[in-house]
Image 1 (cartoon, one colour):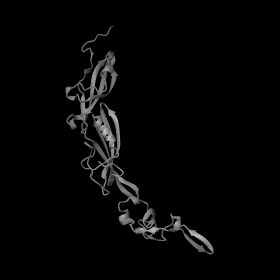
Image 2 (cartoon, rainbow, N blue to C red):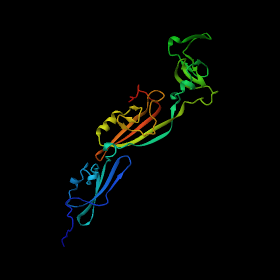
Image 3 (cartoon, rainbow, N blue to C red):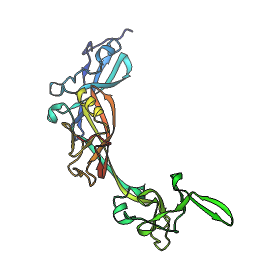
Length: 285
């Protein structure tokens, strides 16, 4: 017996009630929309990436991905996901950044401590037998001595000691050898210390490829504000400004990009330094 069809012929996809729109709170909206179709329906012509959402109020949402399940009697259920930026957020061009922060301690060489020369090792050094002998760099400074009838060329000299048993190879500092005086047990033999480290990880979406190329261009640039150019990347609670060493304290250290529907998803990382990222090494903006 031949099949008898009644109702909508489904020559076009039939939108089903119950479709949803979800807002993430930062400006990214997504919609899951269901259609009924038949085997004869041209799915490929319908699910073109970037096609607008069927509801007039949500045309800023564009088709991202889809799936189809086939039912009995030649019917199918087509589920389509749309994504877009709420037009009330930054005119629909860019979402607000979704940011998290990781804070902890990391090991650094003691010579990088901001107080190393101020109060730890000092800036004035005198020769001492506490440290190892060091090579005399200029052969013209070698000392010739006669020991038990033999001529001996002495090419080494005593190293130099500053505060807290800090040992250097010359009277003006030079290579730091270590803390060699056991009368300072808190520093004796120490080579490293723990310092605070903070990083920010953020995600934002944009419809504008110029924002993508701009952020890629300012990778490795340090900012004194929450913004890199006209794009805000840091939260209100993040410390900003210049560091104790003069450079801006926040460095854009990573920028990753992927396409998401008709949007560009930008994932980035920012490193904080209380000393600052000096302009001599890192461009400051």
